[in-house]
Structure formats: structure tokens, C-alpha cells
Length: 353
Image 1 (cartoon, rainbow, N blue to C red):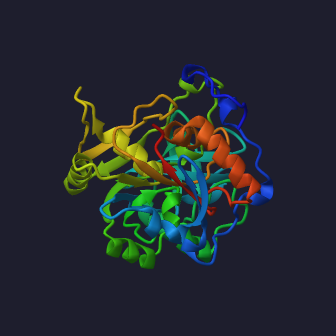
Image 2 (image 1 turned 120 degrees about the vertical axis):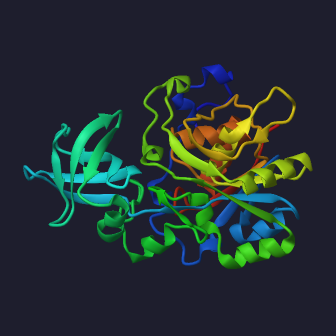
Image 3 (image 1 turned 90 degrees about the vertical axis):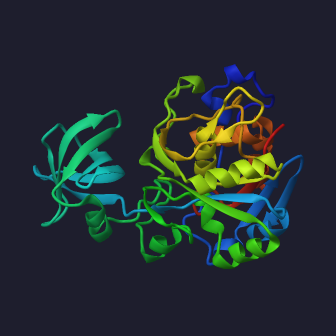
């Protein structure tokens, strides 16, 4: 990433979160075995490990928090009634037959434009909400996606989604359909590794944040303070909130699996003016943009993949672990030829003081 000295937090710009990545380090396919990926431990020092070493890096009674969202087949391809090609990426389903979506076509569609995906499936543009179009389908959206949609691989993965992606672009603990991008930090876990962690005394909790298509949207302002974050829906159960609050009260570590989990937990923390903050249960929307200077109230350790240059996720991990520490870690990962992005390797980040 650009620069050798950390700027004052209020003066950080998008250029401070850029780096040069050799194209061949962008993982195009998953490894044969999920837990075979490498893991870079980032704390006071860097350590090259394997993801399967996680059972030795976590402590008994650490609380590991997962995002149990399930990726839906959110990508549809078809044509406008006028004949032009159209590609739709569903952002979220808001009613049984209504969804918000990113739309790629030769001309910006206007209200009333009809998209035809096949002889049984079509949709009409109702209105526009910022970058997203509101589409009304002629049938239940989730049912249609399950039948006709394809896995919504990120734009940096260049092959068409296939049967391997249908399995591997999904965590083994995925339970609640609604995401249009995988919570990729969780892709490394296997049932065997989860069992070993349980036997070691690591405790588990789950929440749901449906990752939206907005996660692929670029930061369009050079001043990061001016960026407006996309909104995502999350839910935290009473049981999970209690487990997190109990862990923190007892001085045990809360380990977030992925930036989506971290973002939900920090969004749910209620700052009541005391030295302790509580995680509140419930279903909410969050547009929290975590950047350097953010006060973390919940998460002590973060498991995450390597992120795209100039992205909100890279900015988030820089806020969590420290800008200079992340710069050093990414430079090391590139030199050691770690695999990057969704199907790539992982990091274990300790929160900066």
C-alpha cells in the first residue's frame, strides 16, 4: 500500500489503501481441501502458518462467531424486450416477487423496461434506488433463482460458475439463504476442523448478515471520510448476544470469522456511556463504515481473507489491525506468494492496541 509512514487518521485517502498485486496471485479456483490454505498470523510479528493450525492458535473458551448466511444463485442473464442483452445481480429480496438488483445492459433501463430471462421468467423495472434497480418478477424470486440463477462469483474470478463453485462458494455451516456474496473467511472451515476446535474447548456462536452486491461496489471518493457505505441486513439472536456479552464480561476473546461478522457485531454494540458496551439482539440494517480511528467495542481477533485494493474491506482490516501492520502483512504475503481474494488464503489478525 502507498506510503511509508502512517498519516493522521483524518488525512488518509484512498491512495493509502492501494497496492500492486501480480495478477497470477488472484485465486481463480478453490484448493482441493478447504483447510489446506495458508494462514498469515498478524500480531506483534508475522508468522506463516496453515489454516489447519487454527486449533493451536485459538484458546480454550475463545468465542468463535460465524456468519451463517447462505449464498443464493443471484445472477441472471437474459434480454430486454427490445432484444439487448442484460445481466442482473440480485442485491436483496424485499418481497416474494420484488428484489433490488444491479443491472448491466447497454443502456440504463427506465421504469417499465421488461427483462426476459427465459420463457417462464421475466421482470419489470419499477424504479431506481441509487445504484440498484427495483425489479418486480412474475413469480417468487427465491424459487426462480434456485431454478434459473447461477452462483454470483466475484468479478475478479474469470471463469463461469460451475458445479465446483456451487459447493465451494458456500460455507459448510451456511443455513439462512439471502447472501449474494460468500462470507469468504468461513470457506476454509471443514466439519473436521470445527470438531477439533470444539474438543479444544473453543465455543461457537452464529449470527446472520446477508452479504449484498454492494460489497463489490468501489469506493468512488478519494477522501475516505466522504464514502457512503452500502446497507446490509443482519440478525443476532438472544442466545448469541448473551454468549458474546458473557464472554466479554469474563475477559474471554471474541473471534470474528470474517469482516461481515465483525461489522454486524460492532454495529450491534450499544455504547451506553460506560466502559463496557453490550451487544444487542435483534434484526437491523447497518451502513457502518469502519475506518482508521474507529473504536472497536466487541471483537478481539479477526479471521479474514486478503482484500481488494482500495476497498472498504481493506480499510476495515487496516482500522482493526493498524494501517502500517496491514501494509507490512500484505507486502509479506505478496513476496511469499499467498493466494488472494475469495478463493485465496487467510489471515488471523490481532486487534491493534
